Image 1 (spheres, rainbow, N blue to C red):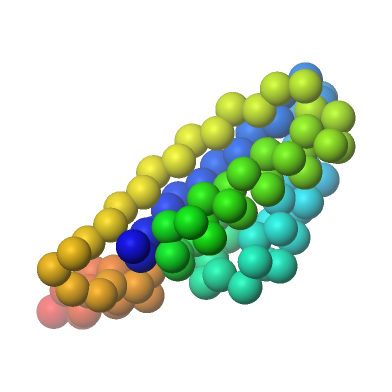
Image 2: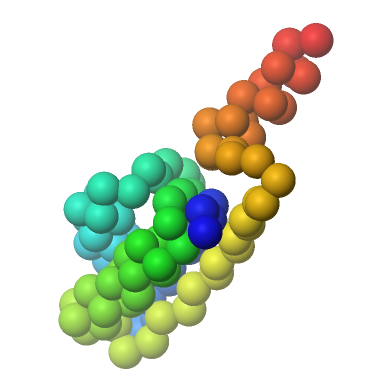
Length: 100
C-alpha cells in the first residue's frame, strides 16, 4: 500500500535547539531513497507503507542514540485505493485552482 505521511519528530530533554536531532532524522529519510520534502515543521514522505514506517522507526532509533530520553512524534498519514496520487499531484491540484 502506498502512503503519504507528514512526520514531525521532537526530541525532549535535549535543550532548546533540536536542529542536530532533526538533521540526523533527515539523513535517515534521505538514505531511505523515499520521495520526501522537508518543511518548517516536519517532513512529508511517500512510498510503500512498510518502507515509510521503517524510516519513521529509524528516526526514533537515531534520535534516542543521540541521547534524547524522550521523543514526541506527530504523524499524519493518508492512503488511497481509487487512484495513484503523489505529494506533487496533491500540491499541483491546489496550484491549478489558485491559477484559475
